[in-house]
Amino acid sequence: MKINTKEMSYEDVLKLPRLQHKNPLKPQMWLATIVRIVCAPTLWKTKFTYTTERMELVRDQPCLILMNHSSFTDMKLAFGIFYPQKLGIVTSVDGMTGILGKLMRLLGCTPTRKYVTDMQLIKDINYMLKKNKTSVLMYPEAGYSFDGCATTMPKHLGVLLKRLGVPVVTVITQGAFHRDPLYNMLQIRDVKVSAHVKCIATAEEVKEKSADELDALLAEVFSFDNFAWQRDNRISVDVPFRADGLHRVLYKCPRCGAENQMEGKGIHLTCHACKTQWTMDEYGQLSADEGITEYPHIPDWYQWQRECIRTELENGTYLLDTDVEVAVQVNLNAICKIGTGHLTHTTDGFHLVGAGGKLDYHQSPVFSHTLYSDFYWYEIGDVIGIGDNEFSYFCFPKENVSVCKARLATEELYKMKKKRRRE
Image 1: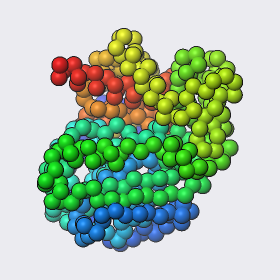
Image 2: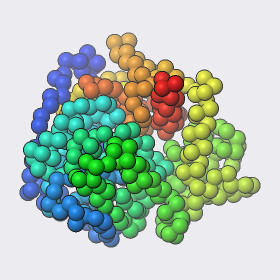
Image 3: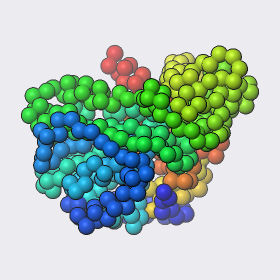
Image 4: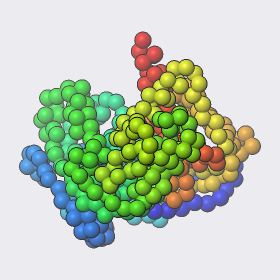
């Protein structure tokens, strides 16, 4: 999927009209039917099935539907499950750019900026539930999973659930991640996909439970491990490109410690610094061609990288310092490419400069619990996204740096700063 872009000067970008709030529209059934028809081939190819639990308790009631975010297949799966039920859908502003955004509004979508505190979004969700009388689908992780496990979610979602006071339904997929993992450059694999749909709390239970209890329920549901599921259930992904791009997730060598010297190609992951090579088998596990295999399980390797970053932050040695191509989004018309800039990330947060110094943006380390980083973003390149409720800045590193490391560093730095504030 590509996105509407245009080249503009930063001065002209500043003159563009800002995104104006509009109340969410009631979903148009004719358009939802077209979308369901478009989804049909994917649902058929993946032999998609789903199971339900406690859903008889919320029949014909508007619900808040929380779905995990694995791949571009997710929205098609949602229509496979809930059609012909009408859905209001929370969507990122970049996902609603251009003419597609106008159609998505008719479909019931409402835009928000990722990982930015958006009080208006809460009002919009309530509007869809109470005024439009539709269920609301949202992805609480917001970003796609890198390592097949749940992406870090905002704290205290239970407070939002209490405020909305409607039934809460979760959708957790199996196989969707393996069909189209983000690191694999949009190469589709032939994998059967399924989902489990569960009412984790009725409206009455939401009222009775505390916010902490609701948070605990969500934490339990969003505690999956797709690679463990693949291994334990012997789900074969026997394609010759299964390790393509894996270095985007596993950027640091556990053998020699070198960063950004890894390359995932074919069925192998190779460190070009120490020449160690790992083979990825058809069940998603790694084995070193020589010597001990440090981390056969990809999420364990990913967790080790997180621990390394935490040490860097504690020692004051962490630094991201790179030239970038910068794109800015102000409204839903287009993403505006404004040329080169420079991005740094330290324990003081992000600092982006560009447009000859006219663009000078700082973002605090406690601004967000995680980072909008993505691989091969809209087929442009790996991206780091920062910004506020007015501007979104999309930074494409010109050097060999890991946007995955930037996300992990943001998450660990946020936790460290919040802990120090509490103390």
